[in-house]
Length: 216
Ligand SMILES: NC(=O)c1ccc[n+]([C@@H]2O[C@H](COP(=O)([O-])OP(=O)(O)OC[C@H]3O[C@@H](n4cnc5c(N)ncnc54)[C@H](OP(=O)(O)O)[C@@H]3O)[C@@H](O)[C@H]2O)c1
Image 1 (cartoon, rainbow, N blue to C red):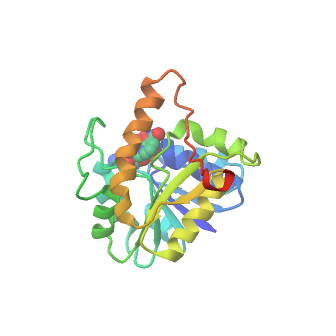
Image 2 (cartoon, helix red, strand yellow):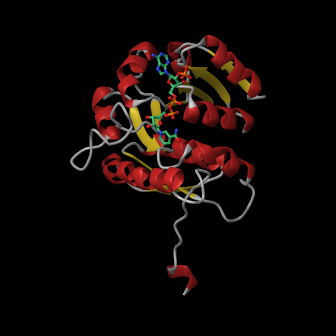
């Protein structure tokens, strides 16, 4: 699949690298220097290149939106027409100093994004884990016991694409339902961040849901 990365920072840089190594075609876009995008593409050691957001969006089977909430409008404007595109978003609606959600409870960042680009198909995914864990999960992808990763969205086809991308990283993809469930997954991320950055184990942290019904 061709994947356009909109925002090549901690999340976009690592996920794009992993997907290139998993065999996808990746276009890194939106950083403050083109040099950084080129370096990411080079070091991905796969089918990856640097481009503009418009180039990343063109012919993309999926886009990853991975920018600070304050940059969403700007990157979407640069990406151009996103009608019919699958946008997998890990972007959280955080305030300027990343201390709190600016949308919560009665809506979510994912739903606000869907209103902002109504013709695109939004899936909320990857926002519930710290970037620091991504390479470790990918390295352990062949192990039987995988960490979970929740995702939600309203479009079945796009959710299937997102689930494939989640599995490519090495997670068990857990379908949490429609996009409005991002009202619960986004605040959950603040718990994960608390454990990752204030806890004793460090930020290489993921979570796993265990089903017990089968095991009784
Ligand atoms: N980091 C995490 O562990 C984590 C976990 C879950 C969810 N999230 C969410 O995921 C999203 C991305 O987070 P992140 O940590 O990956 O952010 P980040 O490292 O700051 O990456 C954002 C990207 O946007 C680029 N950018 C910022 N301002 C720009 C501008 N004016 N022009 C062009 N490019 C610009 C940055 O460029 P530079 O590369 O030049 O800085 C960077 O490539 C956020 O919404 C965050 O809340 C993050």
